[in-house]
View 1 (cartoon, chains in turn red, cyan):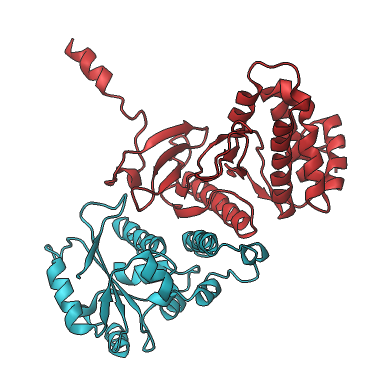
View 2: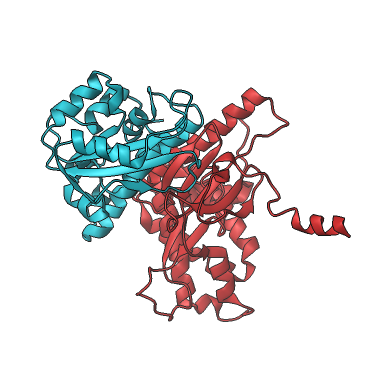
Length: 261
Length: 197
């Protein structure tokens, strides 16, 4: 009996917290998601009313400690650098608040709203008809295309574009019009953990291809309006047309490049 | 009016952080001299307030310094010099002192005092003792370090230069001054976090 009680009370946190989160704070951190490489907590930055996201890459016991430290350090810094660059160049991504590359954490601006995946799915509901005429949904597609275009134009390749890695940040309180049923707001691209620099049409095309495939499997009923994404992308920067041409090639052969040469 | 005790999220409980803002400082040359002479009675972070855009900006530097101190990873002699250096967007220590630290021409001054029990001082100085020492040694008018007073003191031109924020067309195009300040603040924070890495 006693054992059952303590069992139920025990796993308040399934994982040990990173040391920084064991220091006192006004609200306890919440584990938002766990990925293959790390965990994402919602916590606070300096002030109780400033929410932030803490991305933590715990030590991997199966790796040699020296190698583990180097990889973690490298990945934290690489993501932070890319976020900082995006922000400087005017692309909406979470801004970097603080980091400790040796301890393996990165504190980022908390983005309000929901992943675009959720907005699209809510909008679709169980509709099967009239999707290609949904102007507001198509407008959201165009916003996605413009955001991805902006990212590519500043020389960044995301590496894992999906509708889960984009947030729709609702307009700030006060300008709430419910006409578009939760589709208004700005696109904020998140999780640039696999991102890198790249200005080749090939890289851009593969990025788009990954998004296209992910979109097709996450939102099969909305596949008919995905072209809106590409249309907006095309208008967003000068070399977009060439990248789209390349996309056709990538579609024929898949994501992996030819190993010749 | 007295010293503000600052509570920050995720700071070890043994640390105390005090903050004061002085305007119309008349003896900054003297204060600068105490630092150069490494006078141990003047273990403070003296920061030229014109280089600070917001409370969050200054508090971020404090947080970074405290975190380094708690991890035993200081790159400078103590947590106070570390606070000044944490403001920098590069790894150059003397450059950071010059840009953000007190200089003989400073008129508006932030004073940060961070205490924690150590082997040499098991019982850190009290807020009253710190306040009295500052009142006796800083010739200036103490004002509340609110975001309003900070933004009236901030020299945005210098800030943009310090964090290499010039020539960003999209930033210049922001019409709303409040939004612009927030954008600058965010860019400053990420510049500090990355410190040129």
